[in-house]
Length: 356
Length: 241
Image: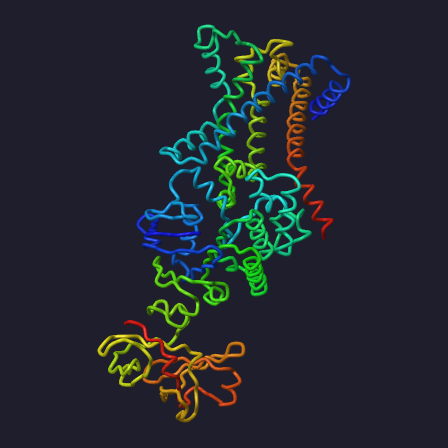
């Protein structure tokens, strides 16, 4: 459905996108995740043909997009974009949703049916005569979604559609998007800085950092096996510690970290510099040395405990800084306090070894 | 104070007794000013769009020149139109000097900068996201420009109404190229000028009241015309809530 080859874009001297290659299959939901300012919006704007790339090519449905305004308009009419802060016209909700249909010369009962259908899909039936500029942020976002869905696009581009919404509206929009995707077999390309949202919605993901697509793959792959330190950091792997492989016996490696040895599963060779990434939620804490099957056990001192919701984030010094995420109830039952000595343990399979 | 009250009473009398001369002057004033405003709007609103939506070298300078021309003296425009349309002028062959037609042309020239410049300002007041949204929803270039123009409709109407105000209230140009010919090119402003010269201050003031009333009526009607749809939407909001 969509292919991007060697896409490069700059604003003045600032390089925004660097050599982006990616493909999105028909019916697939491809989510680009990345920190703010990484180029996600620019990528969507280029794919949505709102801007022309400095270099590189975009293929839509097998056809290369060229510079002809006629061809660009024709392709643009096969897609729709919902932006982070959608602008609504100073007109009724009906007229806003009907806009895309009117510019495509749709009229009469057919137009009305499509508009009403789209409004019902997004839960705004009965809002058709309201002035769109008087709606709340969540309602405006739903109008924007209805406006995009009404034109029945082949490709739907969503640029951080929930970035400015409260959690309830975010959940509502996410459910809408999921329902629409399921019903209509739409191809969707979405950008978000919320990695968990990306994980919830994506069939495949791409991690865009500083204008470079560092990794693409299934959400599980990206979250469990990030290819680099930047990706690991972005996907929430808080414990990333530099070390050197000191042994490798049939894929079980020892990584020397500040005089300690961490056991992990990896194919890296002896002497290679690596990062050991351990997710905070994969670490268990115990007041005494663990005698379970976990291959890694480190004594440390608690430096800080932060409670948030049902969880407790425990920061430790194990010779290197280390963070564990446990339930608040566990922390209370163990009566964890700052300054306590504690053992942190994790399995060798819980260590993600990343090239250093 | 007495003179103003007398003039106001005289103006009301002239309107309600159906003084044919006053009616004739008023009708001619409206005819000339509305014609020039409509022609000006048809020419200079699109010109404002053309300048606003295109990027070219010297755009800022051009806009500055247009803004400077807002205060172009009417007698200067009158002189230019006179030189162009007088018998010896390049367009003297048309023989329209001292006719309502040349007055309309003069007024169109007079309001050109105001309508163009204020249209550019009106369009600048619309968020660029509106045009981008229109384009992302499949609008062609023309459709997206039309959408932005619709969003700026009140400000564009203001531009046109300011143009109308300038056209209906000018006197120098009407005198120079119209000649203030009774029953033919005499308009309210030239009549006021003439009557004041003759010492008929009450009559001049009465004509002045009529002029102001006309400008007010036209402005109110234009605003009402544009607001109909807004009120409709507001009513439906009321019924929805």
